[in-house]
Length: 77
Image (cartoon, rainbow, N blue to C red; front, top):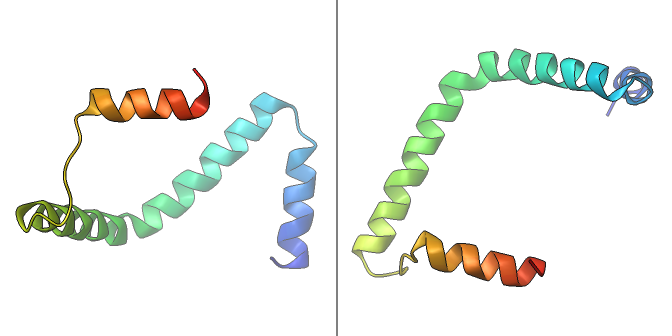
């Protein structure tokens, strides 16, 4: 991270929570607009890759109810 970026981050971290949220959303929106055309093909490729893994029986899908239960146990909830 450049010194200028570090200064901006440090200044932003000193803002009240709501102002930090607004700044964070604005920053995220500015980069997502630039890279949206890159992200969509990447997600499509990932979905296709995962479907192919299931079709080749390389992975076994798990029902959401089981995954959720595992997560809750792991998190102690």
